Length: 215
Ligand code: AMP
Image 1 (tube, rainbow, N blue to C red):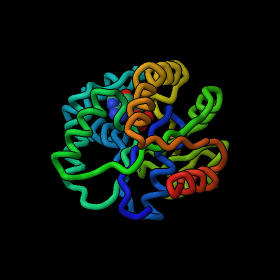
Image 2 (image 1 turned 180 degrees about the vertical axis):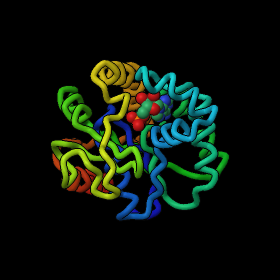
Image 3 (image 1 turned 120 degrees about the vertical axis):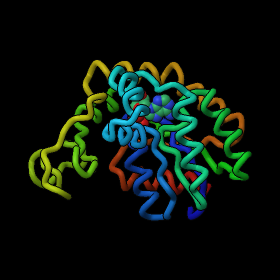
């Protein structure tokens, strides 16, 4: 698994971020999450952050050119294997990624599709909590903190992500079905699609993915 270049594709709340962290820890693949990069820009109050916030809080996608520039910058500084978590999300972004990789002389090994039913997504997102200080991610059902709604790492009260509120979640799922699902075909045609059932605890899903990638 070391040195692989992967895309994690799937609806919001399908566990892409959690698995990308496990892969980072286990195999040293660099996690490149556009959602994390944008949230970081929002926290720092940069121009990019101000722009991104407008879209994120409505559950809409941030414009392609903005996220493409962000990914191009990070990939340019990445020498080993990596996981793109939450990028690409549109065909336009996928085509830009091809151009960036060609320019950098990098390749793509697989696009892993996380398959999760809608009702499970809604259940997971309504239970997701994040630490506003150290950004650790919890789930009140599947990965609860030791003390009620308090971060295990730094003791800060946990919060819900603004875009995990029910109205925004519904819109994010719609956006996924409309834009991002088209990517499944895009990568299937390239022979890069690896579909995994992303239901179960994180360790089980980790095994499903590593087994599927070995095949
Ligand atoms: P995530 O953390 O991947 O669920 O992303 C949270 C939000 O950030 C999304 O709902 C979008 O508003 C924005 N976002 C993240 N990645 C992208 C992307 N590749 N293209 C456009 N918007 C994105």
